[in-house]
Each structure stands twice: as C-alpha cells, then as structure tokens.
Length: 328
Image (cartoon, rainbow, N blue to C red; front, top):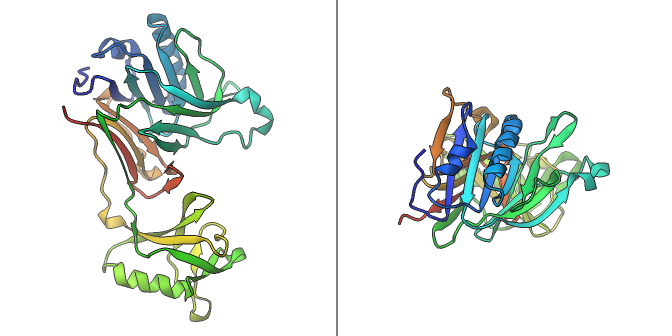
C-alpha cells in the first residue's frame, strides 16, 4: 500500500474481493495519525468488517468509527476514508427505538460534505435474526446501538478538496406548470396551457438525432424537493395526447421541467484522489476477477436507485458526485 501524500488531512482507498485484507495494515500505512474512519462496505462483508473493527479498537481505542452497509458499485467491496479530524455525528435513530415501526424506520443514510447534504440508500441485511446496518464508535468508546438512520458530516477540507455534482440529463424545456392531469392513468394532459403530449413530441423532434437512443425525465418541484420521475416514450392518439409517467402525476399548479438523456453519449466519471458516488444500472454491478484488489486514493460508492443532493434527485445513469483532492 502506497498512500498518496498529496492531501495530508484525509486518505481514501477501496478494496475489492477482500481475502487477506487487513485493516491494521491500512492503519499502519497512513501518512498521518487518524482521528476518524468512515468504513462503508457491501453487505456480504458485514462479519469481516466487524472483526477488523474490533482489532482496530484494540490498536487505537481513541479512533472514531462510522460504518455502514451501503450500496457499492462492486458486489464485494470495502471502503476506507481516514481523517485527521473527527466526523461530526449530526443525528441518528436507534433501531431499538423504532422496532414497532420497522416497515417505515429505514429512511436514509446522509453524508454532509462541503455543506452539501447527500442521501444514499443503504443495505438491510438480516443476520442471525438481527438487522445489521450502521454503527458509530466514539473515541475511547464501544460500538453503540444499531442505527436505522444516520447523518454524519465528513471532514473533507474545503481548502484541499473540490466538490462537483453532475447529472447527464439535459433540460429540453423551460419551467412548465401542470394544468391538467388524469391521476388514475398516471397521465399529464396539459402543461403551461399546451397539450402535454404534443409539446413533448415537438421537443423530441427538435432535440433527438437519428439512430440514437434517448430516455426522458420530468423533474417535479414539490415541497422544496426536486424529484425526478421517468417519462414513458409512447405516442397517444391526438384527442387524448399526454405524457405518461411511472408514478402518480403531480398536482395541478406544480412546476416541472422536461429532461433528456442520450444513452449513446453516456460517459463514466473518473476520479484520481477522493470520493466518487455514482448512479449505475444493476446490470453493471461489477466483479473483480482477482482477490485483494486495492485501489489507493479512491473511495468508490455506488447507487443503483440513485441519490439526492440538497433535496434534488439524481437517478440518471452516470449521475455522480466527486470530492477530489486539489493537486498540491
């Protein structure tokens, strides 16, 4: 292991197919004395992670740990993000406090980075009749109660790292207002005084290139959240032309906007030193053929169902957030 020394305040790495992987070696290789570890992992590594963290606690009782079974782009992976500052625990909810609400208790795992709120899905794993998800260990403490909700602030230094978020969907309309819907048919019939389906077809004709594959979203601005719903690319009869979406339509008067994604122009985001969160398709859930593949300087998290940043939804293939070290 050869950690980068370009950023002295944090160090990231991802381990794929861990077999002989050892957290103590990772700890000993760091170019600084860590105060905190963020330790995400795929659900099949829960037992390994528990074992490694007990060893780490014996080596350095003062270290703070936040661990979570969350979505990873690779099926068998463990991530590390070491910091020279503590991780702020903004809020949490314990499993034992919500056992009676089990069906609704598991809401989200949130990271705050550069003052941006990033909501990720996390994996629920039943292990010996107990739900295993998220734990926090404070300095000189034990691993606390099992958590169902957690918000943490990861101390990526804003003077040493940059933040970027990007969606590969492009707006093809201005702001539109919903005028008429058919709720039972999941159909939007009028937008800003226009026949919604006719407007949609006109925008498609104007922006699509022959021979390329496209997908569409409707971004709906409701209650301060910008949710995105998929638009079905069907053409209806002239009399009942509308836009069919895959969820109940927004209320009349709601503001929205149409977005387009060209599947032939997708690109894979690249990062060299930092944290990458990426929306990907389940079909692209990757495997490494070799064991103990260690990628230094990069923590790669995935999100098959997408993620949210400051209440805006990112659900397009290749949508991503990057926290990257500034070259020194």
